[in-house]
Length: 73
Image (cartoon, rainbow, N blue to C red):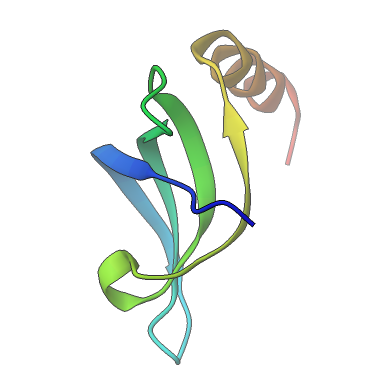
């Protein structure tokens, strides 16, 4: 499998942290030199390893925001 190249352009926020030190974060990430996208996923301490996550364009992120704002918790 080819290596995935990524650059965390901006760390937006920390959602949670497990006892093992892994964190669930929202970041702006450039994948393989492409334009940055918004990303929600688990990261090991130091960002050496990552878990599965979801990557969203700006439009998708705004749509998610609107959807969550319209939903009663």
